[in-house]
Image (cartoon, rainbow, N blue to C red):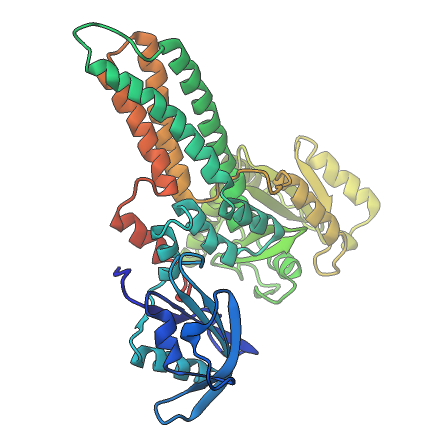
Length: 465
């Protein structure tokens, strides 16, 4: 990436709309925009416009034909999103108008921005660290109140502050340890090993806590996977359609209709659940259906919550066979026993079902998916099963897999520091482990980075951000 160039892109979502915003950033952003802008005040120029102000005028082509009437906002370096001179042109949302203005900017010396290039320049210019930059993408992708709060907290630097504090403490000690190496013939210790062990233990606990938060963060960011499992024709697809409030899955009285996995997400009480409708489990010789059933087993193992759905009118003789297969793969997960078609049985038959499953210790609930009886109760049971804590603006929650892996590596390094102090290893080995821990913490914030990592991160952004 050549940060000396001036870049431009459409920053609003693709397609038409009420308005659109075209962003320009770089040392020639204002002058390039001035070439195509005609203010209502004839004697006025964008070059003279004060920072953080807006001007009204027209965008014109080389023939002085008006393309659109626009508002132009000016942000001067270093007080802008990217840290460079930035121009934001707000025009009408016609796709034709957007493309015409973008084309004129390219003709006047701008280059088309790459995905994430505006945010990458903000990082390179010190406007934010790497974890904050990644939070920009998380904020754009947030679909629930919890994921929004999590992204906002990271953008404000809550996570970064925690890591920088840990890294600074380690830096102070590693400096003393390495100073000892210059006086190794005198056999002196500048770094108090007891203090270092206390510090390392505290840091290990903080890193461990941050790593543990990834389970919650990942669930809030990507949705909690919920597998709908059971025999054929018990109403799994009907229930999926009810939960999603749309006809997503084919519903039929024919056994084995669902042969592949169907997935979709819905937000319940601010929490995203990713529902997975699976092929009905039964003993079959059909090769395609058997492949679908094998995928069902895989999805049970991947899910956090399992909705085991039973037809109240037909609890079959294969129930022990079915129980064995579901229980084997759902060990350690939240399993909710869902008795479907409750509208078709009498009250005393419900008591028989309870006796049949008296060994089952998890949550059980009675519904009719087709008649939408107690489906709200099922949603409440899902929220309880998720057991997600309330996320506040002060909570530090890890939701990025790259951050989680770096924390795991940092944890291994700090544990080696603790073990090394206990067995009395030499300062050079101790220093190496401390620096390795610092390295992985620095990878998260961008204090340690390389072009490959940056390219991978920002390449996933949308163009214009």
